[in-house]
Image (cartoon, rainbow, N blue to C red; front, side, top):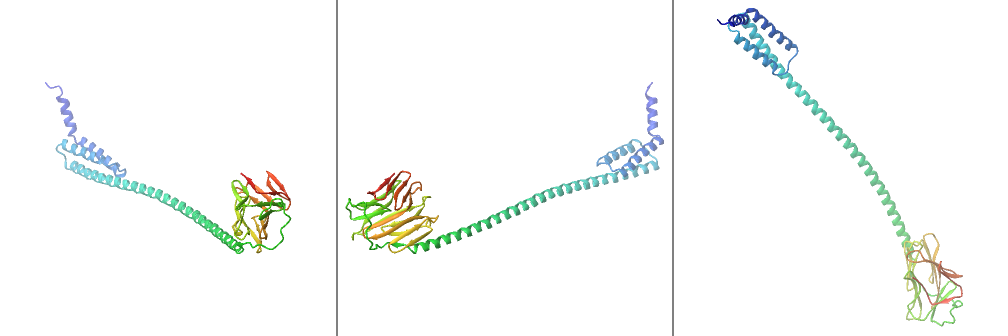
Amino acid sequence: MDKTRPIRDWLDALWRSPWTGAVLLAIFWGLAGYWAFHTPSPGKAVAALAVVATVMTFRGELTGIEKTFLTLVLFVLVFIEIRAIDNERADNEKKQRQFFQTQQAGFNGIATQANLNFDSTTKDLSEAINGLSKVMGTTQDAVQISAESLNKLREKEGALIPENLPTPPNPCSSHPAPVYLYLGGVGVFASSFPHSVITLGGATLFSIDMDKKGHLQVSADIFDDHGDLVTKIDHNHFQATYAASHIEKSPSRLTVYGRSDNKVLDVEYLNKTSIRISGDLHSRTGTEELIIDDQSVRLVPLFSLQAGTCFGGIVVN
């Protein structure tokens, strides 16, 4: 005798009972009603559809009312699944739209900041260019003024012509020579030509020569305390530079002033064989200073030659 037969019969009767069908319908409709107001994620309604279809299959012969309500719940679940899919698609599109809007806002912020930085850079560059233009304009004005000043100076360029003045008392009377150079009150004699008179730092600042007619000629490079060439004399022919502030010149005399309006050089062509020179001279480096006046010739701070002295030349290396 099969002892499980009563249990199987009972279960079969329970599964086919109208009450079981009513309970299952209530569960299915309750779930469908809940999802009608609270849309599930896609796939859940499909799972419920599968369960309902399985129940309809295993329940066997169903009453007309049960078939009707089960079929209706199937359609409701299909509708819920379609709505779930639409909601998910709409939600994804919304999230993508928000993402792109956030990205766009970020890009716009970057672009705005870049434009602000570019505008600021452009403004600074424009100000720099304007400032440079002003500086260039000022520089051009200064160059023009310097050029005009130099042109005025060069209007006085040319050769020094000897006067016919008497030769001063000669400290070098014991040294007969065809020509004499007077450095203030100090005499310089020369019997061979060309003759270097003053050499500082290995460079000749003053030299004298004699032309074919026996006329004395002076050549000199005159520097200021900055080592800038103020004036150049080549065999009595004078040339000016930017370092000279102004010049006084007559046919036989030349006076040159430096940037500080100090007298740098004073040359007087007394006669064909005599020239007198004074001034405040410097070497090419501007370090050695040679002061020539009526009292002495002083190379600061190395030595001093008093008026009445006679010598052949000064060489300081």
